[in-house]
View 1 (spheres, rainbow, N blue to C red):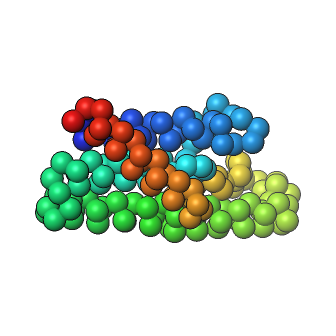
View 2 (view 1 turned 30 degrees about the vertical axis):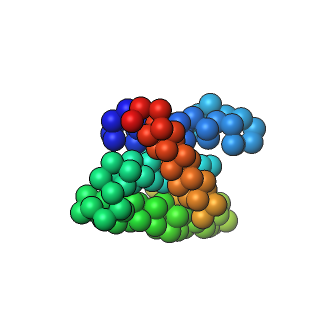
Length: 145
């Protein structure tokens, strides 16, 4: 498979695995962000691994892909996770303040539904995503190259 093909395969395979890592098993998890394993991490780690195998660890292209991969995995476990935690706090605050009562008094609707909380990943989910991406890239390399 090409660089792009194995990267997308890793992404979709990680999303597929989320069905079986959620409790109870939930088909809808395959279409949502967050959860085990990190599909973002699987996506970029398979790309970085394949680039390193094809062009070498000392190549300029690998350096670019490695930096890109680090940014994506940091974002998945850091920034996006923080957004999810903030959404959790806001949802609890809204429930505590009884916003629906406030909305009726002011005659307008402010919030229709809870904010999405499962956006980012725990470090373990990111590590499993990285391992999955590397494993799939190595399997691809051994089978097709």
